[in-house]
Length: 375
Image 1 (cartoon, rainbow, N blue to C red):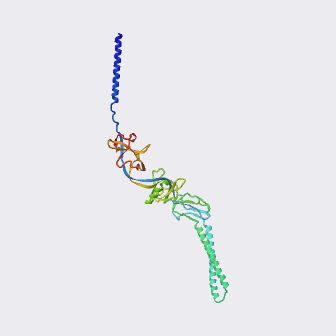
Image 2 (tube, rainbow, N blue to C red):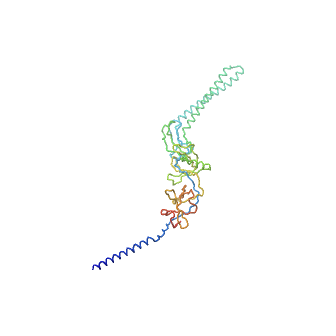
């Protein structure tokens, strides 16, 4: 019995060893089998194009009015009326306020009466001088009398001239009682109400009139861009675009007007002024806008969709589909200015007609196999 039991145990052990040997041979054979090639990644591509790309210099600017005038009175008196509506557009010479002029009219009447009185005295003295000149010829008067009369005429001429100056001065003062707009523009909020006594020493004025068109925008650019701007100005008119705060809406298109004559040493920038002739109401005084100065244009430069550009530790790169085998090549590129949804490539990293990957690039590496499923 013991011999039979020992034989069964040995048989079981032999079977287990055979099974283990077979499993080891199977696994070893599986390790040496050739792995199938990785499946091609589906990607979408687009062809590189040649396009003119404008080069812009961006800066934050402030809208400044062409002229802003604070209307003040030039004579003291009661403000009798205000002849404008707040926010109204007024023309040059349009009446906007009136000062009580009754006292000045009375003074002018007195000055005119004095002038007429002295003119009459002068006329009589001139006639007497003419008679004395005739009488001295026949010896009927003395030379002293003639000289005295000539001096009297000159005195009266001076008096009349002084009277005329007084009349003219009062006429000017009287004209100041009617306050007119010195410019075409939009009048602001009223600073004083009718019935108040206004003086020439007041600093607030009656209202502020701002000339809205043409509007100007002042912005500062780095001094490093000064050479590009001067080069652009040498070629002709330089275009400047004014966008809203979010850079979404184009408010107006204008031209470069002038550069400041010195660089601000504290900021390393130089001020630039642009003029917008047809801005309408899009540009408002003291409004902040994003100014874009067109410094240059890259002619027929390779462009790729901005979304195709990847960013790595060695800089920007794109994946280009190359034949044979529909594999991709990682190309390091130097990215230039963007226009819309495309960006320029400056270093000839890609050529016109090459296919760059737009979708699926996150799963790719240099030399990965791909399958173009959509252009």
